[in-house]
Image (cartoon, rainbow, N blue to C red):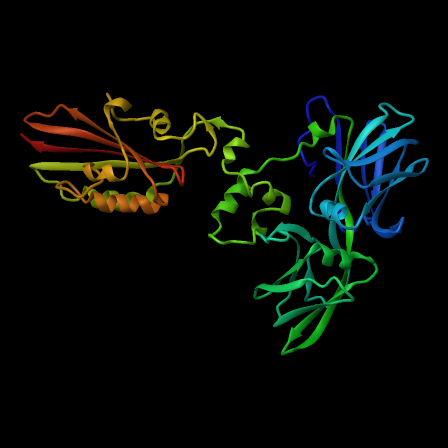
Length: 440
């Protein structure tokens, strides 16, 4: 069940969700049981076409009021002692709710303990009453998604599955734009005005015609209606129980992982989830920080490059790369991810007297040309090793710490070699531990 937010401490919350076939949705809290008819109806109220949602309470109603955060929204009316309705005019108010904006309703009762509640509902377009050919599967959901457009980036999207040459949707009005996704999947896109026309009246179905060989060979019909899909009730402060969400990290990452020029962000989340991230430049301003730590990841893909670097030791000069390990860093942490934070978090088993951070060399990609481990020199092909590490991490900017530690060696010289590479773009850390030596 989705409450739309975690309840604050010491506050009560009841929540429920409705399937497309449910006729009523219920939630109860303390002495109040509330239910909504899941299917809204369109009526003309005071000369304005409106969506009407009807609800029933188990207590005598004193007062009802509908709102969204910081603004009255729609109209709530008591229509009998235990029944009320919410009226949403078509246009801006209905579009806002259908696009994923939750609607709050203050419900005050004459009796019971307590007598003051807040309900929260969500309303979306949903298909039902499917009739006709079975090979066509129509998803009941029509959800708002973000498709960048200078006029309106809000698109209502559905889906139909059928293995066919094409799919033609017909009806009096409210016809979606149909486009093929793959061999047996079609995307159905509506503007707000089109989705409103498809739902009003709720008694008129849309027809899905299967096209084979240039002609319609079978048909399925379905009705698109406005549904109350979730209902929650609380006795607490609704702004604390259901705070407006910030940009979510997963959505932010999905948006920024899309190729340059992407307009359709339907894969990244709902319209409102994506909208909240569109103008965020630093996700960590909106995401709780976690303690900085390194999480080890599989670096076996680098073993071939390590083996290649190890080739060529002889009796007069020797070298070896003992290990390559890799880690990821948190996106938003305290302290923030950095080369120094990665060095401080590392454990160095098998080595004593590791050079202090300040005793090593901090450099960038250009400085790696002077690194024994990561440049091509007498000991090994470090350039090939660095290329393999770049491929593993995604490349781009790299920050490096290089350390050298001389170790006892009779009639010879030997040095432990350390490298810590931090790639900010992928937040990956690669650690190399090896050695070089030569006879005196």
